[in-house]
Structures are given as C-alpha cells and as structure tokens.
Image (cartoon, rainbow, N blue to C red; front, side):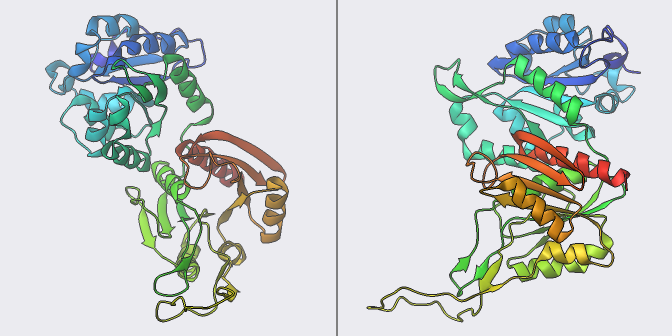
Length: 418
C-alpha cells in the first residue's frame, strides 16, 4: 500500500465520524488557513484524514502543519515516484469514503468542471466513485461571474455537493458571498452526510424521471407554461446515476445540460411527455414524476400569430382542454414500476398530497410548499415531506442535490422492503 495511506496515526475510534475515511483537498486561496482547523475537528470526531494539496495551496499553509494535524504525509504530486509505483492516486481515490475540497478556488472549480486530470487533486476527483463535497472560496466578483456559475452548475449536474459560500467581509476588503464555510459548519455538514446522506445503491435498476415544465402552444409564438426550472429532476437524475442506476430523463424545455451518463429525451408538450414515458415505462423499475406538467392546453392552436385587433374590447378568451395524466397512467400500467409523484402546493400541502397519493395509487409522494419563495421553483434549495402508505418523513431545507440523495435513499429502502 502506498505511503499516503499506510502511514499516519489511526483515528481514536470514538466520535461521530469514527473510522470514516476523508480525503481533504486544499487549493490555493487565503481560506486555506482554515484547513488545519478543519482537519483537527474531523480527527477529534474520529475520522481518518488524508490531505492533498495543490501547488499554490502551499503558499498559504505549510505541508508541515497539515501533516502534523492529520498524522499523515501530505500528498500533492501526481508524479510522486514512491507513491505512484503502487498506483497511489487510484488507491487514494478508492480509499476515500468522502472527498472534501476546502477551500475550492475559482480556478479549481474551472478545472474540475472541464474534467482536467493534470494534477493529483483533479485526478482524484475523476477517479473516485465516492461523493465529492465542495466548499467554494473566492472574491465576490469571481463567485458571481457567469463563468464560475456555469462551472458550479456543471459540477452540481455531475453529482457534486456544495456547502457555502458564506456571505461576509473578505480579505480583499469587499463584502458579499464568497467566504468559505467555517470549519465547524463544514464538520456538521460532513457529519450529516454520513448520518443521513449515505449514497443509496440502485445498481441494476432502471429509473425513469420526468423533469421541467411543459409548454402548451397558443400559436407559433405564445404558450401556456409554469415556473419549473427542472433543477430538482436533473439533480435526481444525476444522483440516481451516481447510485448505480441506468437513468432515462424525459425533460421539458429547460436551460440545463443533461447529467453525464443519463439518457435524455427532450419534449415540449404534455402529450409528448406522456408518449415518451409510456413508451419506456414497461422497462423501468422506478418512475419519478418530478415534471410540472401543464394540466390543460388550448383546445385550438392558431396556425399563425394571433394579432391584437385595434379597438377590440373584452380581451381574449382561451378555451382549454385537459392534458393526459402521466403519473396516473403509469400507476395504472399493467407492468407498473415503483411510482413516485411530486406535488407542488401553496396551501394545505400535506392534506392535499395525502389525498393525491391515495387517489392516484402512488407508492410515494413528495410534497413541497412552493408558496415559500426560497425553495422549489427556480431555487437551488428545496424541502420535502415524503408520504407513503403508513408513513411520512421530512427532508429539511437543503440543496436540491442533498434532497435528491435523501429521496433516493428512501426509495431504495422501500424497494428493498417490497
């Protein structure tokens, strides 16, 4: 076994992280000064910690300090002959139960999003099958730059988890989002991950997911739709793929790129989504209807753009007809999978969801209260109550990636009990 794994003190066997193996990646930002304290906190809770640094990280914090607090030699060089003689970087990637990148600079986020593998830390992220938790840290302007936000979105779609950044004063004198989460907050997030966020296993399962809105045309220019961004459905698709499932995503029109390794079928209308789902439902083990499907569509679609007639009084009246109920059709299918529905409610959320689950004969329903503007539609965060026959479970406010993992964990649990 390579020196980065065999040497170093063993955890004390006590604490909330007793025996857990955590790889901490430290990149070159001023927030690197927090890394030794984070290592200390993790080891106090019983974790084994292997530190990997980028070249620039050592301009802010020394290898000697990190080795002293971790009890292990610090790794930084992809071409370390002593370690790599035994394929050390692959061994490290397999050893880690969780990879934590703190701080993660704008440069590191860009390299990770591009899939670079020219440095040890980037290579480890590609080679590991374990969850990756990222704590960004940078100047507020860098954090808010569209390029950084694109990189973050790419990494979220790839299944990476995020904590922070926090808002506050920075070393550069500016104020805003960009501060790395404090070591205590990171510790609690890591503890919560191992307590409730163990990656569910769905190996050999085929998961069919709908996501996003549908658009029901009025004429070639206008349509009826809703505020769904597709973020929760895409997060579920990425998480299910990471859990070992074969995933098919039927997506309405959204401004998101498909998760890696996920078969994606693009549709526009509710009828198109219905047809795409029914063509594939007999081949799936789990169906998750996350899409906000329009309940109604215009009865007649004008072949040309409808003009505003001068002097017209009383406005325009649209005649609507009901769209097919996709999730009810799946629940009635003779080769029915495990059926999970979503309910976005603005009042009496739990009562309405319980009634909907029973009426449509769903195995599980996930309800959120979208009257709260900080969760649900277009937000990066969500909170759900999961309801099934004889039980309920609350997923508190968290990132949509965390919510996806928690929901899939319950689905895996319910599948195992069938």
